[in-house]
Amino acid sequence: MQRIDSHQHFWRFDPIRDSWINDEMSVIQRDFLPEDLSPVLKENKFDGCVAVQADQSEEQNAFLLELAAENSFIKGIVGWIDLRSENIVESLQFYKGYEMIKGFRHVLQGEADRALMLNSEFKRGIKALGNEGYTYDILIFPDQLIYVPEFVSSFPDQKFVIDHIAKPPIKGQKIEDWARDIRTLAQYEHVFCKVSGMVTEADWKNWRKEDFNPYLDVIFETFGSERLMYGSDWPVCLVAAEYKNMLSIVSDYTSALSENEQNLFWGGNASRFYGLD
Image (cartoon, rainbow, N blue to C red; front, top):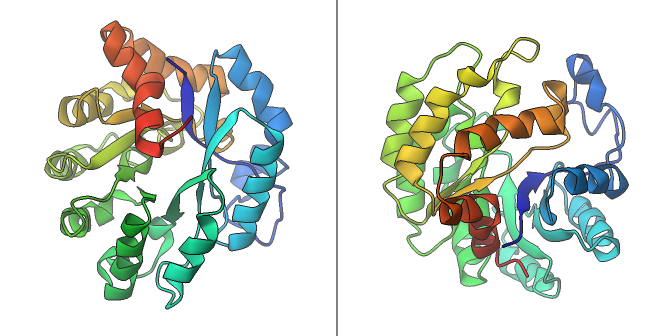
């Protein structure tokens, strides 16, 4: 079974385009390219990764496709497309010529309209994704979880995955509202979840492994071993932890799982969800 990091990013740093990378995150205010990630994956015994968009432009898709063509450890791409475009069907037909693109994502967490996913034009775009067999990554903050059941129930045959366990407020050790909404969402069996991005929601300088256990308990109890996948969120995770230290949080927690459950979590589910080779 291949070990897959289901969520990481590449970029050539642009301080204007990448303004979300503020001075507090200065450690990642530089280029991050395949030659930076490849030795990290090898050191931690991963066979490949899924590269996820970090900029909402189709130029980003072209950039990631170029990197994937040159680096075989990139097994798939989650790109960006304007889901509200009247030309969404034609745009998706163009990408059908690029097998490396497995799905798409929109940065819903940054939208002023917190319920944008329920917008009729947005939902028309999701329907088009499903018609072409693409996946969709749901990137949200916890306040948006209340809208997701209505959203995903509209598309029972669409593959969805929640990024970063919906970014619970781990630093403040608040869990009740998030846990309630996650339990509701997990009832939809076509929704998966990435165990990723947790360290950046914790206290960057003072987190402890035990801080994450209550959140991991909820995720594993609700989604189960067949709908969870590991993701690093590299290089964003570096603002709070080195790759191996971030990885150890999840490795320690999953060590009690059966061999089959571990195989699913560390690669099998990502391969099945994204249709990786």
